[in-house]
Amino acid sequence: MNVEVSELASEKIAEILLSANTRDSFLRVGVEEGGCSGLSYTLVLDEQHTEEDMVFNKDKFSIVVHTKSIPYIDGLEIDYEESGMIGGFTMNNPNAKVSCGCGASFRMANYRGEVKKCD
Image (cartoon, rainbow, N blue to C red; front, side, top):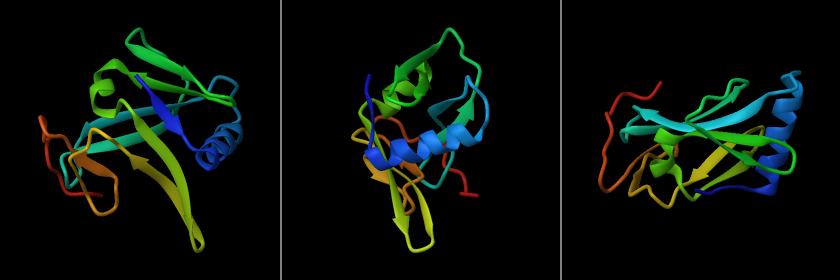
């Protein structure tokens, strides 16, 4: 299992974790049902580990992935792009066969997920 994080995304994640003002925060990366393509990425700050989590230590922070999400995001590349006055994280997933226009949801060849309207 591998999750790559670009240098710019690493800087942004470290900033966010620092501003959370908790010592034990990490970035939880996962997948849930929903989105216009059927599966959606989740990126959230968390402080609680479970026995079913895998921890990936990066230079300035840790990424935690629940074992159920691993088949969907193995090889995921997280980047950060700035566009004008806004910016955001982008996902490049080698497992995705179809992605929505905004890049927040995807579908795999062997699993479509449950398509739901994007928020």
